[in-house]
Image (cartoon, rainbow, N blue to C red; front, side, top):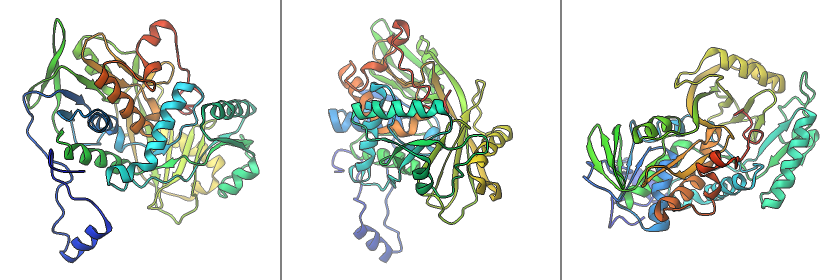
Length: 423
């Protein structure tokens, strides 16, 4: 990234690492600038997580719009971007879902090179276990749909499941493994590095990353949005993107409209680190649990959403116990591990378990929310589609089906099965 128009950044490389090693690593500069807010920007994006930063990046890269501010209440990537289990896949049933998630998955494959930041993308493969006959039929249907969509997946038998993941117990006791929907090019990435990479690239283009800047109000006139009120003063803009996940409803209320979403806590935990024993991602939706092993050796475990609306990020013993008890049936070795830490993230859920990328009743305000439990895997595709919407004022092919009008018109994109743990 050239630094002539923005924050001057040096290219990361093996030679840079060697050079700084000889200088006792005293020459590394800040990854992105920390500017004071300007009075006005062409575009303001509220939300400094992966989706917001990706939107800003593709506004600059794809559309040449760089007079942009990304406004974040806390620290960059401190919300759901840093609180997820990092799974990346695109094996969704409906055509619009498969298109945007596959776009995201393909962008993840080249992200490290595009951003000059190692996001540690690991295409280790993702399998979704079929543990009932109903799931077998459902995943075989998805396999056929994926074939028509150009998304490479396959339904595999229990013997192949055991071969790919030797620690799995396929015989039961309650739910034997009858097969799995396998996506070999799915995997994981380092969530913090994704946010850092996008922020660094945005700063290099001259965009402003405004951390610790809370939005306290949204101003508008007869023709649409005029700006935002923040803890650091007023910022004027005629294009405002709301990309704040579980707090989208609160921002929409400030602007004078409502969104058809509800906020729920999604909890996760990691075990103590152990030697490598699992090099794939496994999702077991019947018992509501999913697991992978991190590069540090921790078993990364997630489950379903809470059954009630809340904004807690602490997690609860009840939910962790429920998730681990369920997974132990399929992975008996988990019973011998200790939990290292647990946490929760606030997910924004729509009725059809599909996102909203849309214009709003207020001209100049655009919204990107409702990703539920699938937010991290969608980051680059979401940013690509939202940037196109904000730049052109109307949705492109990726975002067209995800407008707010679908709820009024009954054009639901039902992903209750593909979303797995989100129902």
